[in-house]
Image (cartoon, rainbow over all chains, first blue to last red; front, side, top):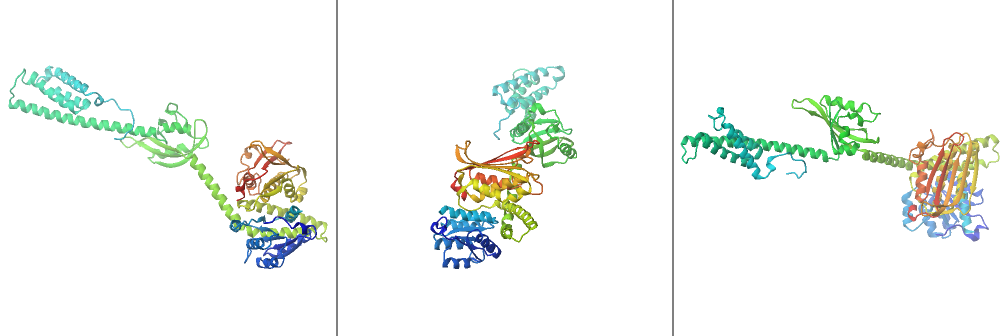
Length: 135
Length: 483
């Protein structure tokens, strides 16, 4: 599982973030905040929609809610891990969803989890930290 | 026969056999002597019956038979047919037989009684041994409450010896805050009522309190009158402590389940509102008054967020330890409270050391810092100084482990000494109306999970009051702690 953003692209273009959340207001506001902060963020409102975006073009980071109807965030994360080797995944949840995390870990995946509610400054700092680790 | 060691009352049956027969001979000789007295001469067997009865009572059946034979011979030789002779008339034979039968009966009865008495004595001794060897405290008292007996279990439980308490009033065992407990028990006993498994508190000789379960039964005389009471007391301090722990654990588990069940429902709206307020702040058309209202809204939202995070400390945040900069994390946690700090006129002093990176669960460490900062701010409603320091350190008490020390200090009202020992217990709070009482408990759990330590010093002295939290975090955390 790679850590951080592709170093050669990080300094040239804005890091591309895919924000996945079935609650539109959350996906839209996070995307707007990140766009104002030097990122190129795109919202997706379901796991299914997220996978379609990822299949077209691997983003640098996928920030995904966990509990979503249909394809949940862990399944999105597993898909990213299997498909886009350079993409970092951050799981973003209001509850632990421990069983899904453990299931994911038992399969050999390791995903970082951020807890809601997360202040935008914290999220921006986290993403910039990912950028710094690869520069 | 029960193999119990207990003191045996003096009994001739325990002596060597020859001594019993010697004593029997003595009794017969005495009876013979008494039979020479004028009133007894016409009743030759009179005192011999007594000799046989005494022999049976004290020496047993065998010596009693011997005494019977000896008495018969003596009676015949000295009184019935004086002198040595070989022929016996029918009457003489009948008299001798009758004498022997009566002596046999007397010996039997005496022996039965002796056996019964010995059995009763042994039974009593056995019961006394059971009482003495019991782990429970067993004592007896009069209806006035004067202690009349005190077993070894009572000595161990209360710390008083038998000599120290027999003759004293039982109220010496009762704590002053329960003045009516013993009178209540005594009043029930006077009516012949029993008191079963009454849970209460008693006080030992050294002044420590005991949780006990006491059962009191009235003692009756042969006429059925209540003459006293027998008390069996069991120490239930350990059981009570275990029950209290279980209650707390169940309370925590129930609270955890409740917290988990509302977590998802409340955190998503909180996330949305947090983001919207953040975006609103960037709106250039917002006037000064609007910005002020926005600032208050953000502060209140931060309070709700903080409470939500504290209650959700019950579940494990599943993520891998990662390299984090402690100073930067603390600075970031502090930035969230910038509006509140400004609103309460709290001055902030910081000292960030270098090289303060550790391997840890960043989200959880951030929660610890957030809890401590929030507590410090709450302690200074009218302003004060918040000091934060981060530096490399060693934990000398833990194998000289290398790590980072974080100090968060405030100049608030301080924490009273008697409250400091309970500070890290769940549901304990010094704040009225705010907080869940879980922040420090969760924080300590997180720090300990990282094999770190958290300590507090505080003063309530006017003019020098304040609280200092010191957290040590090792450079790396154990692999098992992330699970």
